[in-house]
Length: 238
Image 1 (cartoon, rainbow, N blue to C red):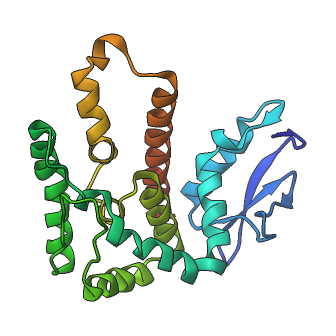
Image 2 (image 1 turned 90 degrees about the vertical axis):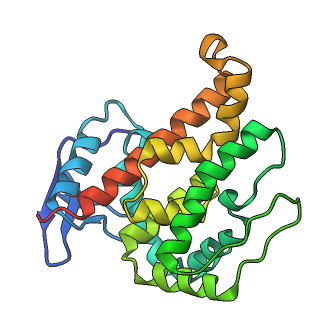
């Protein structure tokens, strides 16, 4: 956290996009790249984030700035990041179901199974699921099709895909998210299905969740909401 050292935040239109400036000077990412928003709508939100800072600059209160900065810097490591993301297909949360308790198994089949079917329909290839402990190994063709899809994404969608995959431990859900086929609340419900099931048993609605768990869930929703907003802003026509 650093002290606020600027008085004015603005953007400058260039051929590359909208360059964010503090007191008329370009600001850079950690790797030294200019922070350039692809649309004026995104630039305006970033300007508002910087403008809202008080004595201290708090990065956690500037989610769109953070995601854009990450997107710009990820360009250099995209191939290695893609490789790590595609590997999630073999460990995807949506493919590992339990045998018991029966109620939880039923919920997983309904909720997680629906997203496995979404993947199979979207990529036109089946996935394996298991109720055993050992790791799955999905078909090489499934990996290839996902790789090709990820390669087709621009850096903004690519960054969001990486964020959501890491956030929920599911590449399947992240793919649905980038396609706009799953909303934040659905994403949360699927990612936290087991925790929410246990919460019903222990009557969390009455007793509440632990402070640590509450913070984790709030952070999940905050980051997912920011990711959705970032995608929407990157698609603005101006």
